[in-house]
Amino acid sequence: MQHDEIIENRAELTQPGGRLMENGCCDGELVFALKDHHHQFSLGLKTVLHCLAFAQDEGVVPALPEDWWVAVRGRYSLGPRPVREDD
Image (spheres, rainbow, N blue to C red):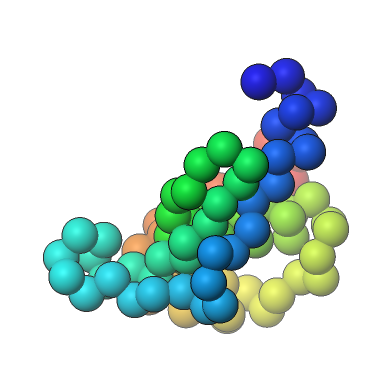
């Protein structure tokens, strides 16, 4: 896919909210069902949290308190927050 085609092919939720996967397939992770113009797929909460951290680091969303990030990293086993080279 070309860059413009990728940007214009945004995914949307296929159902409200997410689904907690407790059947052993996703380590009990909350998973969201999405679709774009060509595919249906899932997106896990861990991926959403990584994207949120990136957005915060880029300054496009307000910063969340560090104690919130510590709790989230511990609860979802996200590991330590990566240090940016320009920090």
